Length: 119
Image (cartoon, rainbow, N blue to C red; front, side, top):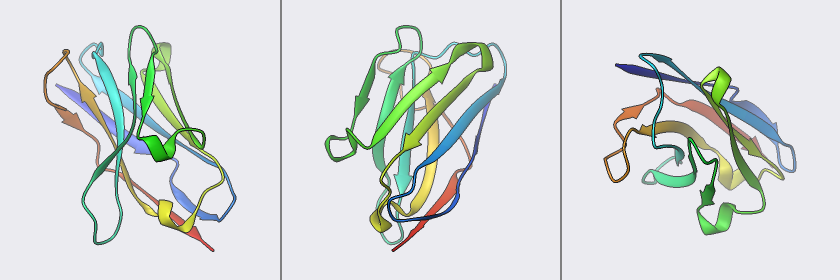
């Protein structure tokens, strides 16, 4: 079993930067990939960014690319999401999820961390 825990959320002002983390614990963590998702108030959950665990290749929701940067530290079983030039519309609960094998569902999810951006 894998547990994912997000941290680092909080309050920010428009234009600020914030880095949130997702740390895995439990069994040996070797997923195919890890993704960040978010759910804004009144909206459906949406994909933000993903990273392939072994190769480190990244992909982003189009509108995020350039402001958000996903990275991972394999030694710490941790994936980061650096968010720059934050906007009020980035306000959401941010979740990380792990895809254990290529093409499988997002099998493990964290509880989420709240990011609130004021104008």
